[in-house]
Amino acid sequence: MGKLIVLTGPSGVGKGTLMRSLIEKHPELYYSVSATTRAPRFGEVDGKDYHFISRQKFEQLIAQEEFLEWAEFAGNYYGTLRKCVLDKINISKLVLLEIEVEGAKQIRKTFPEVLSIFILPPSVKELERRLRSRAQDSDDAVAQRLICSQREIKAAHEFDLQIVNDKLDVTLKKLESALFRPSNS
Ligand SMILES: Nc1nc2c(ncn2[C@@H]2O[C@H](COP(=O)(O)OP(=O)(O)O)[C@@H](O)[C@H]2O)c(=O)[nH]1
Ligand SMILES: Nc1ncnc2c1ncn2[C@@H]1O[C@H](COP(=O)(O)OP(=O)(O)O)[C@@H](O)[C@H]1O
Image (cartoon, rainbow, N blue to C red):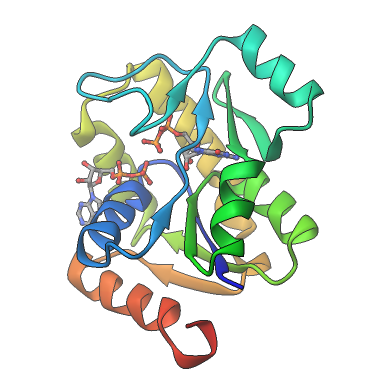
């Protein structure tokens, strides 16, 4: 059996950046591509960054119980496709999910053996700076993400591990040691 790892935390904290670095360095890891109703950002590729689908299609997949978890975040649906994840775990893959906090809570209930890691920002000010520096979302979308972050950060203690993403290389080392410690390999 493989292992399921969930990275969660507020939008803009650096989850995607950390995930991409991990995959690049450890190609044996399997990153589960989520489905979303959000419009693609500049440069995002369908099937690689997300499966970009309509709300109607997403609701159909919910009804068909195709999602391991799903949530509505800042006005859009996001969800993890059950089949892909379970197939990979069955062939002994270390499977990584990068998802928001409500979905991560659902996974902890349905999949108690998951290793759940909450990424924290060094400060709220730095979180806002990162959200704005990404320059991919409207002021409104940034404001929505900041409002959500207050509630999300309060739930950090519910997860197995909390890591502050201050210096990227230090955070990566901490993540690697959590992922590859003997009991998880
Ligand atoms: N519950 C859930 N959240 C997801 C999924 N995929 C992505 N997310 C989260 O949805 C939030 C918004 O994602 P996105 O719009 O891509 O913005 P960004 O991750 O902040 O750059 C982030 O916290 C993602 O981690 C998923 O399959 N399920
Ligand atoms: N440790 C870090 N120090 C400084 N900037 C960071 C760090 N980690 C990520 N960033 C930057 O913060 C912004 C948000 O990161 P991103 O990975 O998109 O976050 P998330 O996926 O959690 O929304 C990006 O511009 C990214 O380059």
